[in-house]
Image 1 (tube, rainbow, N blue to C red):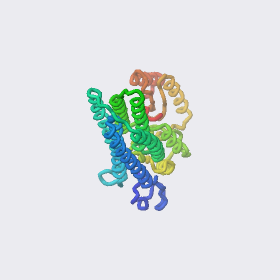
Image 2 (cartoon, rainbow, N blue to C red):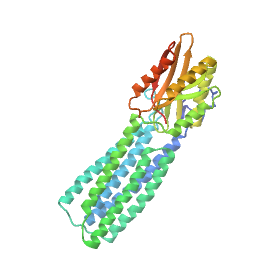
Image 3 (cartoon, one colour):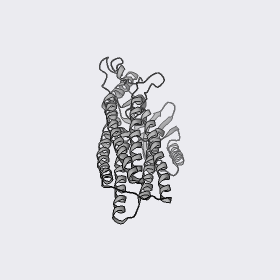
Image 4 (tube, helix red, strand yellow):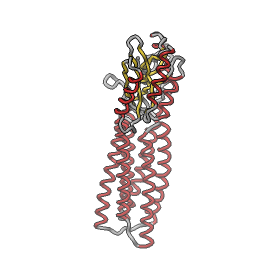
Length: 399
């Protein structure tokens, strides 16, 4: 089955499967998404550079390690936004011979680089804070310093909420992470402001300790971002909402009796390619199967705004004879009678060869998936001794 072309420069050249030339569906407007991410990232760069400059000046003049580290954190945020822009531009490159599925996964690498930068900033600032705890210096706050820190809190809250909102709207993990980081920065800036007020009121310097706390939060954020990105690269379970949407579209087809084994591989936040099995009556002709596969690919592509490409459709043939239908029900009762069975599908009987086939999904929570599977097979073999039982243990990849 051919894969639908979603390249901007090829939209009018290659018709989608099952459609005439010029009738291909409109893919998701990736250029608009790219512009939105770049525009939002530029806003973050400008805001963070300004905040970093003001805070650095105030930190040096007031001899405040906490404010200085806050400035460094803002600078690392600006650098993260620059990397987000570069990554978005690279990810938006059109597919080519070497990378036929495009460069969308560059966004995951971008997020990884950002997380490493944040982690490095947290570790280095932590080291400096510890040094200040060992050899403390007396801060010298002014009204201007406190105003700058307070203004930074307000700016970070507004920036964080805006960036996070845009990130969720365009499905950009890097923006969502940047927005969350900005909101965390606002909380840390409040702690810096609190330390200054404590010093002015009681003469107790908490500068270095607050700096250490800020460093810990920065390092924690970096580790969380790094783990999230690594998890995406390893391959995460698809969202239940997306799985149900795709299965629902396929189930609408007239001859489809069941939808199973949906697998989607991510090639970036906006492109997933995969396969699925559908169950059809054993009276379905090859021509009808061919048309069905084309319609499934086309309808899923359209209904997901070009984000999901079904590259292959496998076929399960359901027997229509009454005798086999009764066998199916008996086997179903045996299989679902086990505690950890999530699904039973793909049942088929070749009466000429006395061959009985089916697939079963057993939850990962089962203490012994293989053992439970073999027990199921033995029970079915005992129930139908005249048949060769050929079963497959499938994985639970969708909710």
